[in-house]
Image (cartoon, rainbow, N blue to C red; front, side):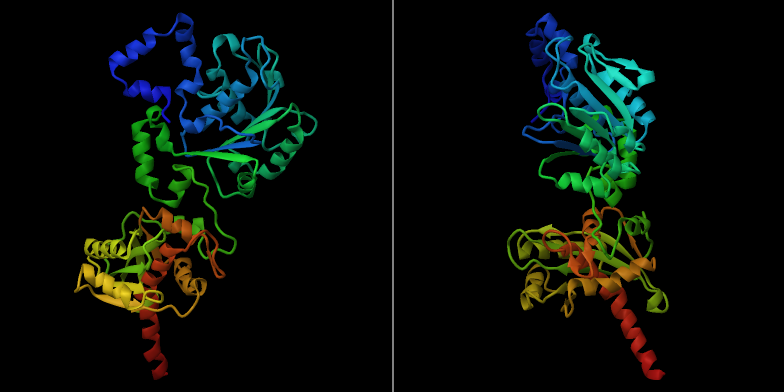
Amino acid sequence: MRSGAVWLACAAPEEVEEFLAGLSEHALLALPWLFEFWAMPHQLAPDGDWKSWVVMGGRGAGKTRAGAEWVRAQVEGATPDAPGRCRRVALIGETFDQVREVMVMGDSGILACCPPDRRPVWEAGRRRLVWPNGAVATCYSGHEPEALRGPQFDAAWVDELAKWKRAEECWDMLQFALRLGAHPQQVITTTPRNVAVLKRIVRQASTVVTHAPTEANRAYLAESFLAEVQARYGGTRMGRQELEGVLLEDAEGALWTTAMLEACRVDAFGDLDRIVVAVDPAVTSGGDECGIVVAGVRAEGDPSGWRACVLEDATVRGSPLDWAKAAVAALRRHGAERLVAEVNQGGDLIENVVRQVDPLVPFRALRASRGKGMRAEPVAALYEQGRVKHLRGLGALEDQMCRMTLRGYDGQGSPDRVDALVWALHELMIGPAAQWRRPQMRVL
């Protein structure tokens, strides 16, 4: 679905003129204030009998405008003096100053969104907005949950909940206060973060969620801003959160954490002595992905001090021939010396498929004798020692890593990308270190 703004931007000049000429004088005056015409799909409230609407988006994705326009739609009636659906609204941000400067008076705040004849009056002393029809929106701070004891509301707009320090307490107090009207509702506009309260809200059956990346609102953002943040954070786990608006979770007891992975990211690694392509094959032509990860090592001295870098996640979905082509292409692209693959499920079929693409490709078959979690643990230890770095563009791989535990994978599907990563680093670092130690032990 395209918004009216997108249609106008794409339409030929004569189509725009014809459209505007067909509007009455009153319709022309009202057009700038018809948010349903200008809004992007993620900014419009979903249909259905929901209690909470979570607008989860990247920085600058238009979340604040969505929240302000939703409040306006709740309190406005057919005329400036007519009552709307709601009369008592709570506006809650991390601090009172942020509520005032962003939600009320900001460029996309409530005052900027309301047409002149329906614009509310700001009563600074009482920290509230009062509409011509008598509706009132009162401002609260997420630092003061006790302030929500006593008041009652039929609607609420909660902004940037994921960064509040007392989010759990404040959210619970709001739920007790949201008790007026036939069906009180609340909107949460936030950049996602891995916090318990947001995850709890999203999982409730009465919650609906809309997503939007920063890119969705590029018409209203500086090109230099977009270029800079994409260059710095594109393809990273932080970028998936802050730019794509994806809620990323670290599983309890995860072998890798978001903080660990953010700390190991580099823009370049320099010369590498060995590069391999590791494959966790999908042996059927179905929906499973085939994990393909390229990594290299700088082999200087004792293998216990070697440093590695993960260069690319080339994972694909498709037939065995599709992933074999992708793996061989990755080998050629990076000048890798070997392709390694787990053959527990496919046996000789794995090597046969690869050799259909390139009969001379250096290939090593690997067999797993331990579970995924146990196999991944020594690789995670390399990260804890600071011996593995990541180039940018590995966001999907890093998502899986943060859901891998000693018990196994705490996520949907199979951790194909992580399995390929583990095989690559076993080949480059753990295997050579084990071989180095054996002769030393015999001498002693």
